[in-house]
Length: 339
Ligand code: TRP
Image 1 (cartoon, rainbow, N blue to C red):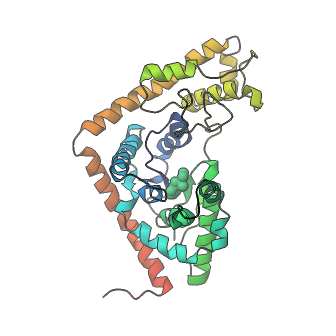
Image 2: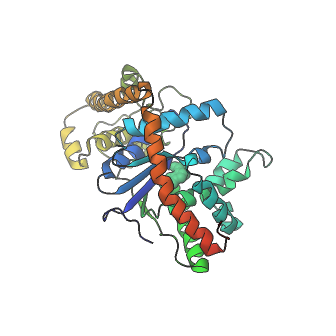
Image 3: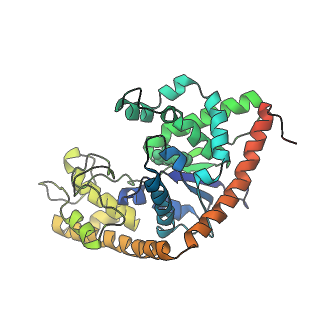
């Protein structure tokens, strides 16, 4: 099975609708999704079925799902080029996930570090079984579309390995059915750290005020957060993996991820500058990124019917492909076809 759309390899990725996306989510994921959309046949979904592996408030989940989809488009994903859809709108995801759940060895699932981390924080009686089966659902997302490439952060590599192993197992038992996907590496330096604590990944759930820049932050607030970022007592402005210099490195990384310039060019440009200049320049490019994104976002959210029509078209395109793959998998496994 080969993904076909002209000769373009297929890309699939998703983000949970957990709301409040940060500039880390944008630079680590969304920006890359935008950059590859002309060269690949891209499918981007809002993974609401994954979100319910932990408790969600129904009204909030609905709101955040729409907001996430709007954010994909505001960030530059063009729904005329890429397919944007909501995971639960395509029932084949749940159906293939069940088949894969039945095939996924418990040992593999228990070895997933994300499951170990998330489940360690709760008692056995409050964790839903969906948290353990999360990787099988993610595998279904990817395999339904015969995705060749999956742009994800390092923390998802293990889930991608799992997807490949499971696809191989299925193909071996029932015949060639699924395409084995590869990770699409994020461009160097797309891992953005907290501004107040540059040795921890920027996270939307971190409580402290100066930790994360949210995509919908007031522009003046975003600027202040950059100006207050932790640096160090050195002087040179250079990329570095020294933990003591993580703050400056993080600011440079943000700058590089936004401008796409090389490290050499950036270091040369800051060679005779101070930390104040660095922060002002980074604040400027951050604001320059957020401003048009926010304008598009609010325009989209205020245009009645537009987002829903995009999601409906996305659903139809996605369901067409997903349904064919699901049927094939069901047939291979021996399900009686309905007459
Ligand atoms: N697990 C991914 C994350 O937390 C989200 C996700 C769900 C995903 N399904 C996917 C990513 C399919 C890529 C492809 O980031």
